[in-house]
Length: 91
Image (cartoon, rainbow, N blue to C red; front, top):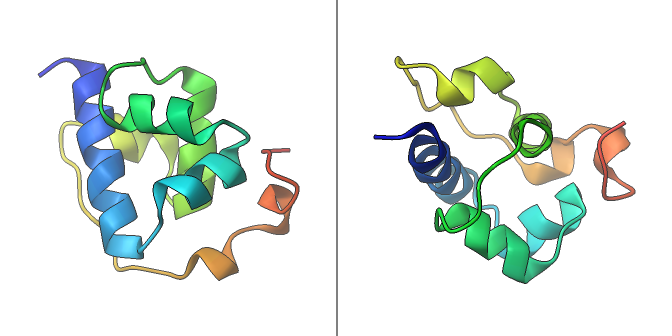
């Protein structure tokens, strides 16, 4: 499995476990719903910045998202996300 496919698959699993919709993911990471959907479906590559934003949104470290040994963490609410994401971007 190529790295982008791995990232997209894990992102979908994490979002499902945490109850994060595509719309919420898009809003919190400063992208359109269409672009977020394309990333999650593997049609658009995740950049390092995208991986970093997703990690901050979901409480993972970027390396955890791409490591060979992935562990789905216990869920947390999106409401507990860092205030840095409140304006739609990562600071």
